[in-house]
Length: 275
Ligand SMILES: NC(=O)c1ccc[n+]([C@@H]2O[C@H](COP(=O)([O-])OP(=O)(O)OC[C@H]3O[C@@H](n4cnc5c(N)ncnc54)[C@H](O)[C@@H]3O)[C@@H](O)[C@H]2O)c1
Image (cartoon, rainbow, N blue to C red):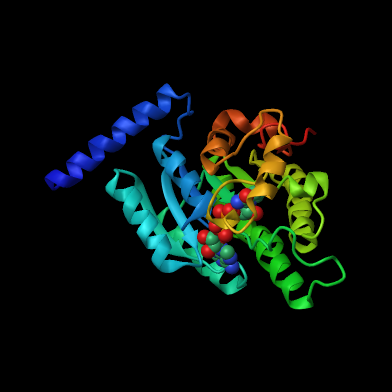
């Protein structure tokens, strides 16, 4: 029998699942979802929403302590979740992660390629970026997403309704200046989404990308307030956005019904740019 506090936490969580349904969050019950970069930030919020929608979760991150804490917090709230370490810069680490998931979960219904390195908004000009930064950003954001997709593809195919959601950025759509390595990496994510949609579509796996605008979270705390306000005033729906605002779209893209959107890039930025 579960301890009383666990029962309480579980009932709190099923209450939040009911709340999720009231808010129109689609169901991910019976689906196993892997989220990279889920220790904190956007990935953590996406994990919370997927758990509310009823998914079983594997959280992957370089940050082991934070990742385990996040998994523990979600688990205390009644989610079916575990943490597994991954370093997306290291192909062997990605292989180890995939072997672990193959052994424990066996089948994966969804992969969210969320982990990335962001270089600061208003950073160096294109001719001032050092080679090391460029290579590191490409290694984690682009090669890491490719290798994670490749390693989990057999398990996504085996599910019969695999869905991949890639985190792009609207900076790659409108061409944000002084952010070239990051913008180029997100442009590559968009191109990979389209190409992979055609390759994996043959096995019924859907691949989409979401392109958020600047969000209010710890990763953008350093951005000066007037810069935040500039972006926020140019949205069709003016004002700040948080990761919670984009999570319902990501949850939907992980469902069976999202296959018709395969290959598409959805700018989840309240109308800052349109495609
Ligand atoms: N925050 C924003 O305003 C914003 C806007 C548009 C797009 N995005 C995208 O959303 C995603 C999440 O961003 P965030 O704001 O939460 O950033 P964040 O820096 O808070 O989180 C990124 C996560 O990725 C993990 N990570 C970094 N390198 C890794 C590696 N080598 N291996 C495994 N994990 C690694 C980090 O440990 C961290 O948990 C990114 O793809 C980012 O580009 C964010």
